[in-house]
Length: 612
Image (tube, rainbow, N blue to C red; front, side):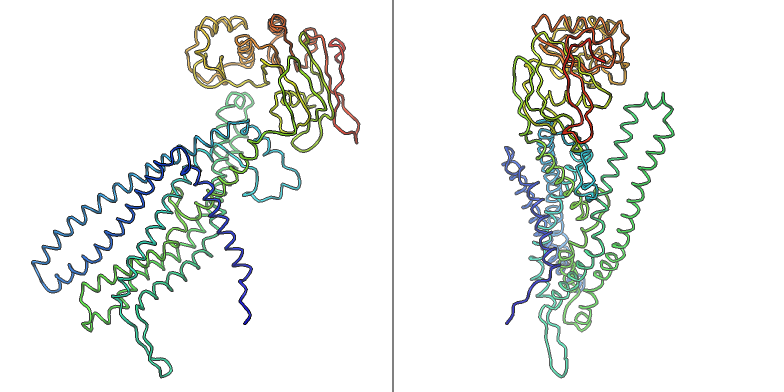
């Protein structure tokens, strides 16, 4: 006999289901193996026991229905009052179980979310993964642009850490406990329903047949057909939920950017452009949400019919036995209750397939899991060290066989060797967009598209084109990333006065959004004050004085040069102004290479005064 071979479609669906379970396990298991594992496992065990208690109370209530309604039918007053007393303590027990099940479930979700958030934040902020992941989003080649949204580089990490982790823990606990409850309820009530439903006898082709526990089989067939139909009607919601979360995050992120760059937008009279772009993002969001609503409506048509039919079905089937006197009213109610419990357990998949945003449902759970899985994979890849670039600490700045590429794959510099020692003041020149800042990133060891070796002087400090100042007290912005408490108020005030910001010297404890509060020139002075406060041996300045007038630029460069000379260090500057060359004694200049060359540019060395 030739064994049957499963259809390819069924194998694919089984593989997809196993892959999804593996993804959920990979996301969920670490918390229950962490340093918080005993509290986590204890809470989980308590919630499981309370769910079992909920099912036990449901069985007790099912038996109470039979006795109570039989007492009503028989006008048995003593039993009636006895059952009211029994209902009192059953209800009290059910209330206690429900309250503590809710409370402990919320505690577990909160602790789980807190642990996962700390874990994700730690890994996202380690080894500059947050920076590399943003670069990876824009490293898409023509071949990669055709990839699906689910496989694209992760977007909006803030949304994934803040919202998706919350949804994942909530969905996972709620749905897993719901499944446990459904399974235990099914096991508990299927025997009751089997015994109550009796046998269904019929004649077919002259032969008599009897189906024992026929209502159990009716419930199984009814719910199995309903589950299959539900999946085929509702599965488009998985992708729609995935995209809805992305569009919501994109819309929110754009509004944050408008708030951050409010002054620039106002000066450029860019309100209409921003309104158009925000309306466009919101329209995309609404269009996807409308598609999601339509998909939910299609599924609701079926589930509503399914639920309404299930309400009347047990009465329809058991009515002949009741009217014939074979069962009493209490048994009829008990049959209806037991059938409802069995049907609810078997239709758990149907009831939980689709749900409004924030309410646990399979479609949302799968979408959230997919988003977190892609984020997890990207974060894991980016937290690994860039093995192609060897960085060491040295008294001098050196590179050997340095290759620097762009995210697109184009080679910016090839086989480049550089040297700068103590006392060198190097000016890095080149056309705008040639890659000067990218070379600085390679020096700092944060550029993932570089190979070769770089020796970076210890006690080096970089001044980026757009310095970052955290919101909060001015002293924290000045001392960042070190705690302000490491420096005395006098040292902080002196640093501000050295960069000609005496008006800020008495505002150290004032809290504000300094990146928006200060002008471009004031921000550059504050960044230089940070350098003078920390006194590094080497300084890497990327257009650090571009927003200053020439007089202020000259005075600040004189202070920077005096400092590095006093500590036997050096400085490397990127600047376009010709006046900056006077503060340097060495030049590295980007020279464009002909088409077909190994790299786009090469670096020429020479005296600073020869810089063009």
